[in-house]
Image (cartoon, rainbow, N blue to C red; front, top):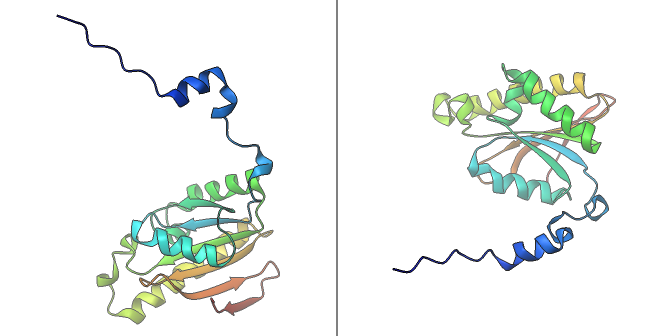
Length: 175
């Protein structure tokens, strides 16, 4: 009876042991500057539309993502302190200039679309959640430009509102 041979480790790992530099990440200068912190939902259906939207704003690879159940809705719930602390940590680490707050239709944290009497009732609820999130975020992060985004199932931003540092409010139309 012969003994089973032990598997050979992958050559990359062996090379890495000999040359540990290959396993280290690139230096910080190899990365783009972090432009934004994004508070988005954990819902897998909206990851791709969210990334597409962020890419259309020139933010691909240049944002920290705080993925939280309900996204920006969390800023108006018992999760407020924890979610704001996560944003604060990202701000301390990477000094972004923007905070992007995202909510989406059919959000499970709000009970899903079927909970509402209709599409407009859901939109009103999401708009109210974004208003609360912007107010809370502006109080904690007055140095940031704050953008509030409502994503639709089609993936395009249904509305984008902006709250500038000077507290002027305007609506921006997505490309």
